[in-house]
Image (cartoon, rainbow, N blue to C red; front, side, top):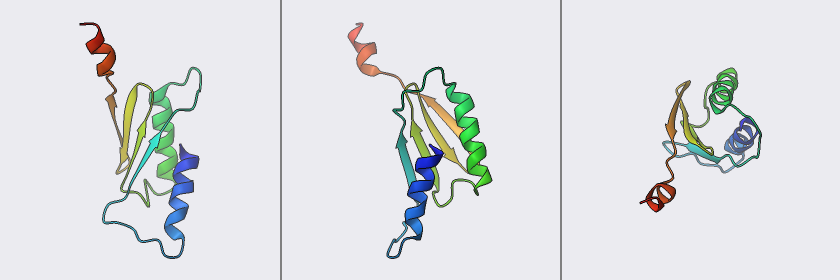
Length: 92
């Protein structure tokens, strides 16, 4: 995720790029990585963001994983579980 964040952040320095008042980055994590602990990965990502000045140039970064939705902002990470309403409703 850090690779994609840095790749997108590089576009901010290109001539003619105009930033908005709030700039968010949304990443869909669909990499097939076996046995990854999402919480440890999120803390690692947050640490690497901190090494590079927080979420700059983004005000917030959102990462949608398989089971959780991660929100990185102000050197903090927030997590919400993703509930598959289609699966839950089909059991009725």
